[in-house]
Every structure is written in structure tokens, then in C-alpha cells.
Length: 352
Image (tube, rainbow, N blue to C red):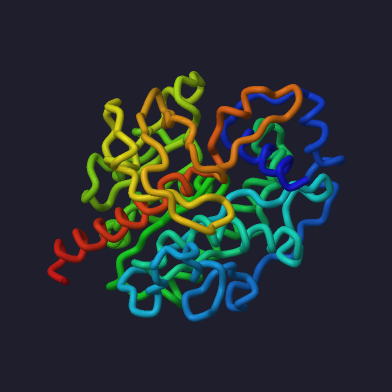
């Protein structure tokens, strides 16, 4: 069952068509308005957060036998991370924060495997939110889908405002990061909080907008990063097997996380500092190469096992997507890059 759930998740994030029979498996049985919305989160309560820097949680994790350390206690940066879809219900269109099964998937998979990449450089704040069920991203023109996504963003916006008011201090740099639905919602935060606020925008080290299509002209004042040291910018990629063509991605930003450029040159696997598989049990150096291509990031199939792809009857293209491994295939490069951008940022404002 877990593999099927992840299959649906990566397919939705890629925006690819599903067979109607598969859509029916995911679709809530009634319209959005037919269900009472789950209670709104209270972000003054620790239970409303999947990760907080002063608390022991999955964002503190490091891969087994990696020699890495969680350094949140003394970190000079605040990281605000939005997890991807971990709710696949056919009842209400939005997850309740009391859904223990959904919270376990969030914590054990996405917070551990993705948010932890930033724990060497930042204090990680990851809110729980009434995330939209996966089906919402298959059928966005549907008013129910839009309402579900908008409800998720109400929580995310409230969480970020609480973060600014109660956790963040004005002299601390900020990294924004997300994956899939989390990236979709992070884009809205950038529009609402950073685009027209030069003071807050000046605190932005970078935004890691991974696993969802983001266009190069998405923002007026925030641009894609062009190298490994630029700050106040964003990176984005969607990982698929080498040679795949998905025209709907052609206008998206494809950053190469091995070089942090957007050209179409192939970066060899020798530049891959280490991937971390789904089980989070090792670091594999040189696990894949990478080449940006028309909004996608092409990689050759990794030889080590554990970097998830899926095959589902009737959807053969699934075997070409590495959406679940968008962070994992480049875990050490992302970790190193966050450290590099923070050093550059601190030098630029006269702090070492």
C-alpha cells in the first residue's frame, strides 16, 4: 500500500495524466463544501509543528554511518520547510492535524529524508497544515480542488506569520524550502511575504523550490539562482530518468544540483557528493549524474538500490520518475550548497 501511495504522489506532482480508474481511487466522494473543515491549527502549540529546533524530532536525523551532525542549536539561519503531500484520503479534502497515520508518514519520511538536509546550517521550522488531498492536484480547475489547496495555504500563511512573530528575529537569515505540494505553497509565501517587502527579501538566503514546476519569471523581484553562491534567489528541479520528454515542464526552471547552474551541460556523477536512499541508512557517493533539459532534470538510473521509482498497471511512465528522490539523489550536494550560500550571505552583511 505504501508504494501505491508514493506512486500517486509523484505522479500528481509531475502533473501527468492519470487513467480515470486511477483518479476514481483518489477522488473524495463528495464536494469540498459537503465536509466540515478540520479544526485549524494553533501554531502556539508544539503539536502543530512537525519540526522545531528546540525539540527532538525527525529534522534532527542524519544518515546512518555518515559522520554528519545536527547543528541546529548553534545555527545562524532559520529554515522554514513545507513538506509534500502525505495525505491521500477520499473523505475530507484536507487532512486533519490529528490524523496520526498522516503525521507518521510526514515525520518518518519527508521531514527525516528532506528537511534534515538543512540541519547543519539552520534551525528548522516545519509546520503541519491541513494539506490538500492528493486528488486536488489532478483536478485544480475543480472548485473543490481549489478550495482544498486554498485552505492548506491559509494554514501555511498563518504558520509563517507565527514564525515571523514568535520564532524569527529580524537579523537572522532565512532559507525557504519545500517539496511538491510544499513547494506549490512556498511559491505563494514568496509572492505574499517577500516580493513586496524589501526588508524581508534582504534576509532571504535562498529558496529551494523542489518537485514542482516554477517558471523563471514566476516572481518580479526574485530570480532563479545562476550559480552555487548567489543569494536572494531560488533553485528548482524535477528529476526523471535520462531521455524522458514531458512538454508541460518545458517552461520550468531546471537547476542542476551538481553544479547549481541552469545550462544544459551534463554534470558527471563524480560531482555528486552523495545521495541518501529512502531508508536513510547510508550515503552513496557519485550516485547519479545530472543534466537539465526543458524544465526537467535528467539522471541515469542509479546503481545503488533504494532511490524510489514506481510501476503501476496502466501507467508505465511512472517507472521514469524519481520525484520521491528529488532531494535524496543530491542530499549531500544540497547540504553543502546551503552551507555555501549561508557563508556567502554572512560575508555580504559583514558577518563571518
